[in-house]
Structure formats: C-alpha cells, structure tokens
Image (cartoon, rainbow, N blue to C red; front, side):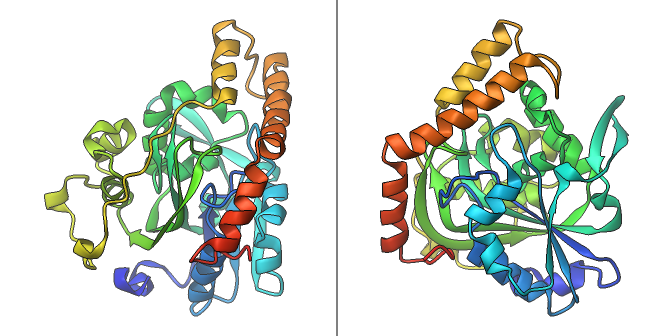
Length: 314
C-alpha cells in the first residue's frame, strides 16, 4: 500500500468502506480474499481511521453472512473496530446511466470505497479482479445482467468512484473459477489507483491477453483507465516473477443448468420468479453436495495444511 502512496489518495475526512470479494460460503481459498490479507489492509487503514466498514452482498448461491463466518473473517476481525455490512440487507437507491437505472447501495454515497479483490479465473469474464469485484454492488437479482456483463461492469465503475484498488494474489484461483477452481499459491499483492491497469497487469501475469478480455477493453474505452503495457508504470521488479500460466475457466455444471433454464424461459423475474427460486435452491444444493462428495473439502484441508502462505485459515 505504501508503494501506491495510499495516504495521499484516501481522504481522512470520509469514512472508508472496504468492498471485499467474499462470494463463496464454502471454504475454498482463492475464491475469496483471504482473511489474513483483509486483516492486513484493515490494520494499515486503521492507522488513519478510527473504524472501518467491510462490505459484500449475498447472491444466488452465496449467503454473504455465512461466508463471513465460514471463511474465518468473523474470527479474524473479532475485537477490531471493523463493522461487517451485508449490502443485501441495507437500502439501495437509483442511479441513471446510459438511459438506464441501476439500483446501488446507499453506502457508496456515505463512504469512500477501497476495492479489495482476489486474483482468479472466471468462466464469464476470463479473469476476476478489481473491475469484476464491483459486480457485488448491483442489486439482488443481478444474475439477469450476465448477458450484458462487460457493459454493466463499466457502468458500475463510472458510478462508484474509487482511488485505491488492491488485489490479493497471495493465494489465487485457476481453473473453473470463480467458485469451482483450484487454489494457486502466487505470493503477490498488487495495488493501483487504476483498476484497468491493475487487471491488465494481473491478466498478463496469469497468462491472458487483456486485449482479448472484453470488460477490460470496454472500461479503457470509457476512460476508466489504461490497459496497454506502454502506458502502465510498474513499481517493483516484474522480472523476478515467473510466468504463472493459469488454467482457464470452463462453465461449471451450475452455470450450464442456468443457461438451460434461461433458454427455456423459466428464469422468471429478478427476485420472485419460480425459475430463479428453483435455480437458487438447486445451485446451493449442488455446490454443497459437490464440495463433500467429490473430495473438495479434503483437498482444501490438505492445501491449507501444506501451503507456504497462511491465508488466515490455519
């Protein structure tokens, strides 16, 4: 954080909300920001602030409150002046952009955002990083926007200013991200005031060309940052970092079933449709079954035990 001179970009007079990536309520390192990294970022920010808010929202297959507990966050932040804020349970307000109306959480109006994401692959967007982490700001029922994902990501970043983006690449995820991939030890922390540049550098490290990633290109076209290597100044020695060669993501079983439901016209309304309720229930049951039946839990236990980096789960 010192390398990006964070004290000059964070306003001390405005309270801070850390938008964390906490999008899986089954313990799977690499699918979420590790509690150790979230603790370190919070500890640093508390040098300038008396208290912080840590925010995420629930989604179709994830209960954010359960994720906060299962992931180790609740224990990690016990006794610290850090308030957990599940945006799903708090008010939203309308914002007009591109002749459309988005519902965004009220907390973006009262707090400055620190965007804390994790490096991982994603079957819909190739990579998930600083740009994709804003997806959690959308209202409940945001899965209906998947068909328009790149543009929605760009709109979110146009509506919600942020001057500090931090990527947890200590333990990342490759393969079938964002929820069914494999943890990968990388041992890096990346940070920037420019989310497009951050994701472009991260994508190249992962072995992907940002020119091929639609939401990165679109955000750059809308003036939200730069993606070309020649336009990015890197602080730190990139030559010491080996090629990471991440395995790309494929669509998960749950995502394929979701596509079938949508083609059949059973997706229903954003919040109350029968199809949505059925897909939500089925997806949650599948993830829980697969986690236990296919040995994921045993593999994760071994990974945590043998990992060089302690993400806060040991």
